[in-house]
Length: 258
Image (cartoon, rainbow, N blue to C red):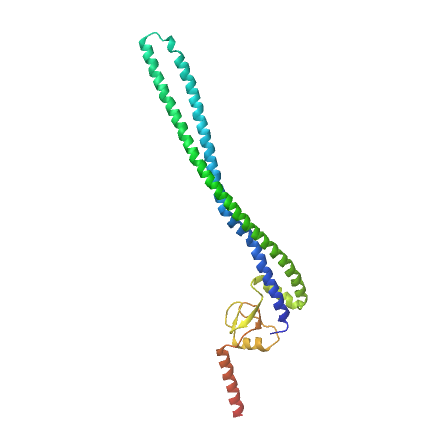
């Protein structure tokens, strides 16, 4: 490996970890939102159920008020019975009383229906409240875990940034400038190993001649495809070995002929 790239590799290791931490911290609010989703859903169902119960209570009270007014009117109507003089008037009065009683039964039935609905909703509300309580406890636990994780990541990030600044001082400034330029367009690393005949950055096959240069030379070489800085890590592929062997054989034959 080029001695020029050794400090850069150490710097890149820090940079990549910093990027990883930044990404992990960025996702924590998203994870909190996902963790809170069941709680929000249950809380909305509970709120809807309570709103429904309140509406039914208002409806029952309205029916009770209507019944009260009806009863008042019926009592007034009955008080006039003593003033009736003819049988015809009395029969008409009885008919009105019968209608009033029927109307009262309708109000009472509406009240009972409202009360039954309220009782049913109260049971639903109790179940939903239990679900909300459980969801709140679960979310609080998940939030605590994520808060601790975020705090730990923030601490590690602060330490890594100090190490990053120190590592950057160990790199030649012109080389650091090139590294920084490449890093801005290659978030997954500005330096890549040559392994199994390929650039590990773009996963494309490197020409055999360039592989040999990266392996032997301390000069800086870059991938012809992704322009990452290259360093040696691995064996020359079989094809490269074969090509070099044929070249050497030809050189020997030429030397022998001379």
